[in-house]
Length: 399
Image (tube, rainbow, N blue to C red; front, side, top):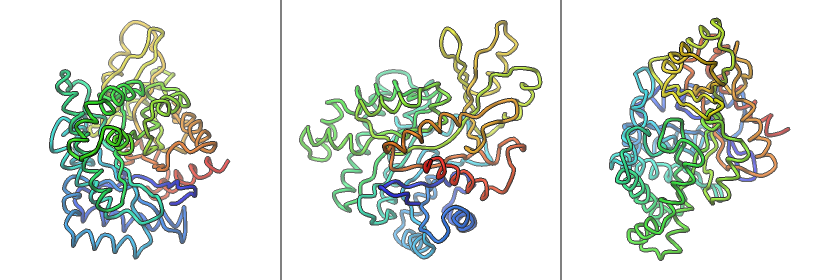
């Protein structure tokens, strides 16, 4: 929904299972009317649309795209942001680290993201200076990057995508922006790593030269185009899990001239109680579908675990564990989670900053883990939970 001053708020449809375009459209028809009625009755309602590669390819068909646009326009919905992170199946099967594949080393990730950009340019409403954003994987899963050649391959494919975005803007007048999403245990994990990659690779003379060659731009124009089309998706759960400082991480990006093209409003889990009862409660968060990375803060620094079971296995070792933060998206309106707390305070600090000065024009609540949440956190239907999250954000922004 349009909050004014060019800022739009939505939720990510990756909370709803659906891999084919027919499944995606059916879930939107089923869920969007009730969510809108509870959040913004009678208003045009923006969608954060998740499309798998299968769904994106189907929607690239002109006839199918036209029918989908008619559905949106008839029912008063619009799309301004896409989730292009998960390429394949995302619900009901083991996802884990496969969610990052194909990564940005591989041409299929480039092809898929090019398709998404074209679809979004066709769906984006002609609302003044409204840009479209596509969030994507943070390069790759960190352990799969072997050296400089892999980093160069990611850089070059991202620049080739930027060239595609330049071409879209030239031919349609629509600006689409790609937003890389740092995440624990990935190539872009921390804000410092993201800043270094942008400065050393994506905004480098080599990147500008490649874009200039593909898009026929002089060096200054190529550099400006890279900054206009390549930026970050700042997921607040991921940043909190990494023990980032909420104000300082935004300041670092602003100082580096890296756009925050999407702000994903999400909460993770804080663990400071390691009693047997708390450990038993923590085991309810284990699931076979998604990775739930854990970052532990110790006096000598941070220690990372690729998934919750590995973190739990460390509890039997000598020494008192430090504070844990876990990548498990929980509803943003929760603060207390039984013996644990959520990272909602991180969200509150960022939204307070946003009230003073816009952090991002695209705000998206993302709690995709509904199907695997511990039962105690499922207090209502998914539609009412989504609406409660959106209304909580609206209230926080209005304070």
